[in-house]
Image (cartoon, rainbow, N blue to C red):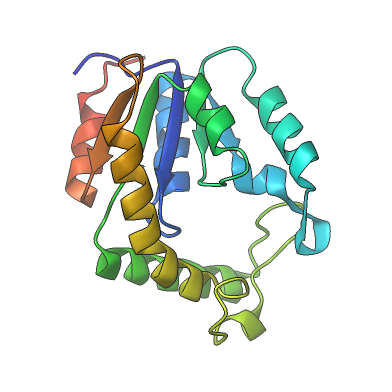
Length: 181
């Protein structure tokens, strides 16, 4: 495979492996890793106001040699228009749910800091509101993201390549196919 673009967007459902792939890809290519969650989630889980989030995203995407991961509708047009490659992690729902459950339990048990001092909350583990539970969010957003990115891929401009990876094996094969740095 030829080298991927210089401005790469990684999208997919929460728990699909966006952060893991983005970190590995950034390291392998020597690119910057832009985690949209880290820009959006301020201390105390307060969201960054939309205009500020958009500006922070613009600032983070200056130049090239970056991997931006996340699905935020408020900044998706900014990320998409600057990307020359989109990698869509479209794993089956059961695989995503298995990954997000184990990831959430690990984060809770280890009190892992996520962004800006925030940590997963035990109380959110059993909530059914997708805005309070990452498990409910992943379950309900999986079909939404599948439809969104299938449509985005169909309507992509020729200047942007789309790569849809539908299994862990496809992700590993993609990484293995990249030229050495």
